[in-house]
Length: 221
Image 1: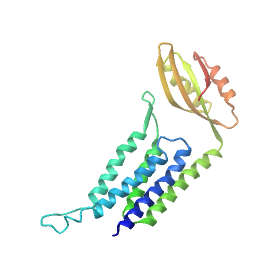
Image 2: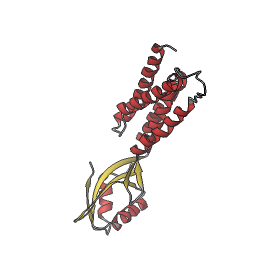
Image 3: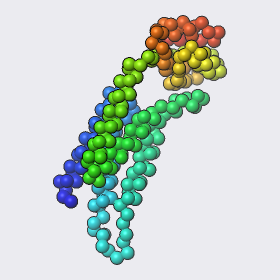
Image 4: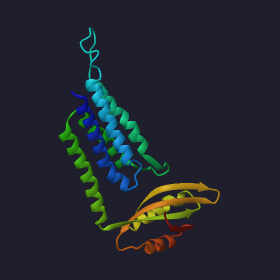
């Protein structure tokens, strides 16, 4: 194995990571171009070291090498990075985010491992599938029968959050708590709403204002 071919593997792994990261970057996710490229490059580098980095000790008496052990540690180690992408937005409501980004990071490591091992076709086939999946599902979401809004609601009591969300659910409006901040004056809650397309933001605001909950609201950022 020549140095040139090993360098080509590193460059191709970086390219694959960049291709995956472009879609994440354009949607302002926590892991974008640099993260995906570095993860893929790092995984490829560790695979190369696993395969070719111990030539000086091969053949020595009582020395046994298992290249798959480093690969297994890549899978385990990248899981910690993926866990850091998953954000618990509100412990009170078990709302989490970043699962797709975490899964993408984990899979990007697999792509880097494949290319680092010389499985170019497999690595770039996986890259193509990941990118197509991301774009296809976003395209579908853009043309389905629902729309998304973000609003900021000011409440007095923590119980009112669940009460408001239950009311919205009855109106066929799904909601997620993006953030919740407590203060001496009450609660500031950012809600991500998914509503039928026939409802405008003003319609949703009127529904919220008509409840018996003591609140005020404004358009979210």
